[in-house]
Length: 457
Image (cartoon, rainbow, N blue to C red; front, side, top):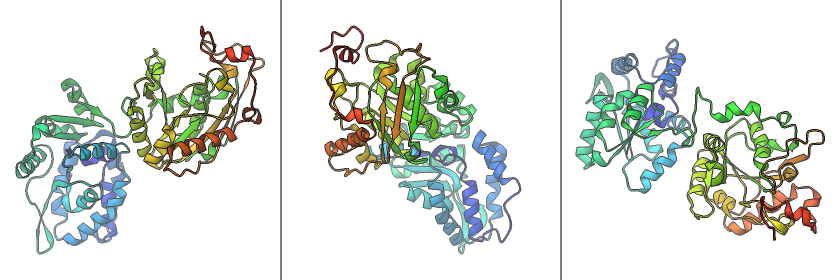
């Protein structure tokens, strides 16, 4: 597996971080950064590589002539953690999958090897293919030792590496964003265009190569840095749903960054709309697990996928949804899960003790993500299970929907059954007192808990 660095493994260019590290090591002898350096790299982040940009990189060895190799290596060590913070959120999962299959992980980049090797080691790469600057007596001479690892030069360097290490390129994977890596991509059996620039996107589409994006889940589009979540968020407002009133408290308990599992009870088809009100207040995309039927529905299914929804086929007993949710959490995302799996029917709907599956506890144990409980109440008055659509006519006396977000639940992470019970107890504690009292439902109340046309108990 060969992976490019800038705009592929990293969210953008490594140049600013490496430049800052070299400044910190005194390699520029007090000189300031180049005028317009940040703008220069911002354009690179947006558009990708260009011939003029790479011509400047190709000329760089002449400007570092006489620099101490040891100082540059120290700059690379200093920059490594900063670069690690720029790694695309879904990239580690891809690397881990290839590693689990016994594949050698190789970072292939134009960046000088002395600067980038510490980062590669930090990320667990087995080898590095990078441009090498010639040296003599511990200092750079101003020349390049070997190929300039870019475009055809990168292909030549990879071929040499493959021959020396017995690697079959026809069985190898290459990940890159750049049109200029086309020679290398075309030379392997499994090319992947990751966050491709426009020209590579066109070529990859024509050749039917995989188009990957490591900054978001598969199937989620992005335009100018915005996902559908950001575009829909302004329209997810209580005042735009006049047939229901919302009382939402405790959203501040949800972490503003990093992974989080939001676990809620399940009472109605309207729960999705209610939880969307919470998600809209976060200001960050939220992924959610939902039954497959939602994704099969026209229009709604496409929207659900575009938002990063995770399809659950209850009949298949597949672990695929949990694996996908795990990847999202490991990427630092927020995932919403309804541990009950489905809306309880009949007398189970009125049970004070909330029964649930162990998925939320298993995800917490896998990822260490905090589990934040949400107590949801009143959605069944807006859209009972017995109705095919919500009651949108009740605008004079709309039912009250309550959402209470609690603090993260302390879990032992060893016993999934016990942890699940702890999560459901925390959710129950957020519900009104009437939810925790045993209630003998009437025949009409029972009928409202079953799908349309169902005969009931």
